[in-house]
Image 1 (cartoon, each protein chain N blue to C red):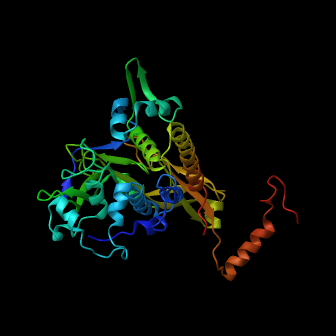
Image 2 (cartoon, each protein chain N blue to C red; image 1 turned 90 degrees about the horizontal axis):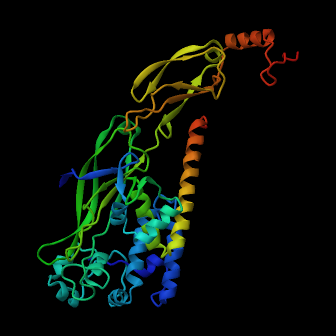
Length: 107
Length: 316
């Protein structure tokens, strides 16, 4: 059976959402979410009293954090550390891919 | 129903303690977890490991599982009478039921509408994710793809979870990025006791391309030049994702130079575009004729260039 999907959302950096949305979708607790914001793994694009908005692709960051927490049975600080390291690895991998792309391919 | 050997999956004896099971799970999770491992088959393997651990770490589920006689993995077996009694279903209704879906549904901590024990609070459905490989061409111009995934659904008669194939037609937007995710809210596993259904995530992976290498939105490809093209310059027809264009190679071009074709890379969803870079590579023909050899000898004799020490004249 083919389903034409109408209710889908591309998780990109151009659209935004609230902290409540990220909490609901990811299953993180408010305390865990605030820790990720505190250490800079998730940064708000807008922060006014009572309103915080985040890039929509942070749905992926938040769900990854929850998955690592559950699958490795991590506490709050373990989860935050794992996410910081994963973010650094992602950045290094992107730089590696970019550097390889610039080099002529071997024959 | 097909038998799965959860002890074999975790690599432990059937007599393993809870601590042994946890240790085995953690070791395998470090090896195969999709967020940690680069093993291409890691995600599928981790699903099996997580499923085995989810059953064996729970004493009630483990007891229920252990009550099944051990048999080779994948062998069909008849569910025990108490399972049929709990669900009210006959033996044939279990044919395509996954053992883990049943244990999750009818044991504490999981849940289906027909649960007889455990929690009675609403349980949200599981999230599912599926990796889809797309070509550079399809994200350059945007495209439609079909994605198939097996998702459990509860039948209306016995409330048994059956895996049902679902195919979704998805529009991949122009300029989608590697690893970008599409969230299909409520299209994952069904919730139970009025719990919300889970979500389905589609993760895009850009397939390696025979010609282009991707860096952000920029594309790179190797442009092979004959020595005389590099020396004298040339106008060369090169393929781009948007069609062929003429590229002017300036006289005196060296290997490893990057010639930019502006805005011929990948577009972004905001209308901007990356660039396409031709990385030059001077290639000597494998065989040269006698005439060519003589011309090279003539060139060697008259040239004063010293490519190893620029600015210095060639030593005679």
